[in-house]
Image (cartoon, rainbow, N blue to C red):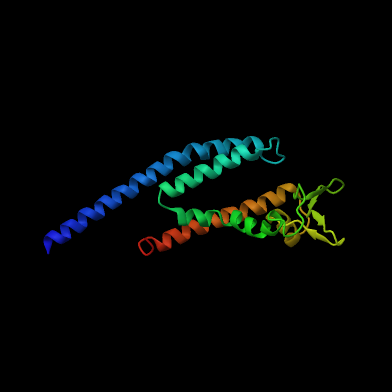
Length: 177
């Protein structure tokens, strides 16, 4: 009936307006975050001069998490975070002490060549194994690299995951949710 169609149309309009408002809210959160991030990147590109540490990391995670959840695109956000999720899953045995975990798991720098190499940990049996994180895995797969080359390779992975997130979202719009 016409009344049912009018009610459905009105309901669809409310949902559309709600989603629009959610996306505007996410944009208002992420625009200043993007400005801060680009400023940090401009002053901290290779060779890095500042260790951003936990403060920026928590700020970035909180901003992106809130924007994704309140903006109603949490599934897309999961695709953006695939490298971080993969790093956690790969690191879990060391993080949960199933295998030895040293205090520092970052790659080691060969001062003579300027190349980064995977770092190792020695187990109680005398066996050595590569520290389990994405940075060391990249170095295992791609071989020793300069910090700049490694950084660009990891940024390429992150950009690819973000592009895939946008692509999957574009393909599934109207089909999923």
